[in-house]
Each structure stands twice: as C-alpha cells, then as structure tokens.
Length: 394
Image 1 (tube, rainbow, N blue to C red):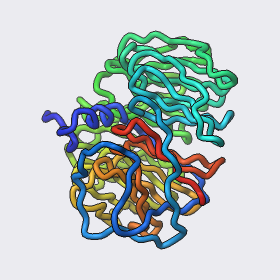
Image 2 (image 1 turned 180 degrees about the vertical axis):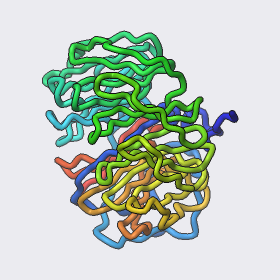
Image 3 (image 1 turned 90 degrees about the horizontal axis):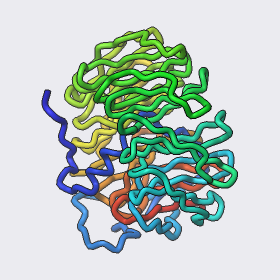
C-alpha cells in the first residue's frame, strides 16, 4: 500500500500540525455573526515574512455584515487543538510546549497554563465526568484529566502506546482512545476497562443512534464497530486507506474518508455501506449540516458538497488555486461553513448556497476553527504564529 503524502509536506512544522490534527467529527455550533474581511488584499496577525503559496483571481467581497478580527491572543507556543468546556465557558488549547492554555471565553484572557504530558493533542470535554476536560498526550502515552472548577489535574491515565483520538460514549459513559497500536476504553474512574489491538487507526466516531464506537482500521481497509458492551460487532469493508469518520446525526449515517480511493463511504445504522461517493483528491476532513455533507479536499483545494438524502455530489466548490483547506466547522444558525486555508493565513466563509461568501484574515497556517456560541466569537488556531485569531460581532 502506498503511503499518503500530505500536500503541505514541504513545510515540516505545518505537516506536524496536520499529523496531530486527525479529527473525526465536526464541531456543531450556533452563530450570530457574519465573518468577512474587505476586498482588495488581506491582512494577517503574523509578523513572519513567509509568503503565501495561495493564489486567486479575486478577493471575496462581503455579502453580509463585515467584521474584522480582534487582537490575537498570544500563546507563546504552537497551538495544536482547541477544546471547549461549556460548563465554565473556558477554552482549552493544547500547545507544543507540553501545556494547555486555559482561556476565559468572555474576556479572551489566558487564566491559567496547565502542564500536561508531552506533546498534548486532542482535547475532549466530557459532561458526565464532573465536567472534566481530557487531554491526549502523544509523547508521554498518557491521558490528563483536568477539573473545571480550578483547572487542576485530577488524574493521569498511563497507556501502553501513543494516544491520539478520543470519543465519549454517552450510553456507557466510557472514553474511547485511539492509540498507535490499540483502541482503549476508559471508565469514569479513569481506569482502562478494555483494549482492542489494532494498529493504524485513523478515525473514531460515536454513533448516538446505536451507541456504538466506529473506528477505521486503515491497514485492512475496514471500519469496525464496538458495541456499548465493548464487543466488536461489525467489520465493514470500505475504500482504500480509510481515515476520518463522521457520524451525521441528521440522517443517522456514518461517513469515512478513503484517502487512496478519493472517496467517501456511507455506512447506515445496520453497519452496511450504502454508498461510495467520489470526491476531490486529498479528502480528509468532513463537516456537515442537516442537508449537506462537505468533504474537505486538501490536494484539490475544493469542498465536495454531498446531498445526504441521495449521497450524490451536488457541487464542487473551488477554494482557489493551490489552496490547502483543513479542519472546518459549521455554523448552524446562519448556515455557514468556515474553512481554514492553511497556506493563505485566512478562513473562507461558504454560504448555504455553496458559494464563497467572504474571507477572514488570520495568523499564519490556520489549522482549526472553533465557534463559541455563548459569546458569539470564532477562534482560529494559527499554528505558525503561536496565536489564536478571535473574530466577533462589531
């Protein structure tokens, strides 16, 4: 099997961020903002002289209220992943210096720096575990649990290998962790209750209809399902080199990106493939709304818009020549998709009619976006500027 090569591999620092940012499901948010920057050139919060490799024949103009980013939040280290605790309205940003920055969602000030294990990556908020926040530390093979009342570390779970992805099963109240050689289930006492020996897992998803955890078995070109009783209940053949998984709660279908096949496989509640959908090259991340699933195609610089009722591609949205889109999110109030362009220091705004509606300037190498529906602000992790861009209503 040939190894998939990231289109941004020419920049080792950015490639490292993307390797860490393997995320399954989109962040479902509510929004009251319209995010645009004006036409005729973009600004950036970065002071680096690194040129953009992105080119386009136009700068997108506003079709709704124009706003500009607020002053960026300086983190002092490379941001990897943004998590959010709705219990205390605080953001948790994993940093490359083995720490997590805790940011007050109302004031946008850093209230605490929490020292974690080495190379913290994904952050998971679990409402039923006393509202704790969990951090996967790839470099130290641990999971750190942070209490929300004072952001103290209340538990550290030692694993046998490097953790990456985490998903919470709302039914059996266990956290499932994809490690480099296994899938591990952790209970509310922070103890490992079971382990499945699989290598090369590229994605995890929680199916809230069946209460199953699905994971991609990349070397075997399969997706496997774990029941809430921690039994493997399905082995599903999909396309070549399956990676990310996303459960669409609106139509109860799980989608998986097949890197080498340039396709998505749609899996129903009976764990059967009901469609194989051809999309652009480099399909990795996905984001969905009630009617449309978007495949974020990093090599072709496009979004493939898929009607979830028919599983047919209804639009291919060009993001600009050479654009490298990454982890995107959906604004369910305004029906917008926010797409970070890794090599353009910007986030593009895609409207519900599948058109580019606007553009937001960011720091360098924006790798993830998150929307705070309490304070109506969008946060962008800029992996080469060591900052968060904040965009809000003016």
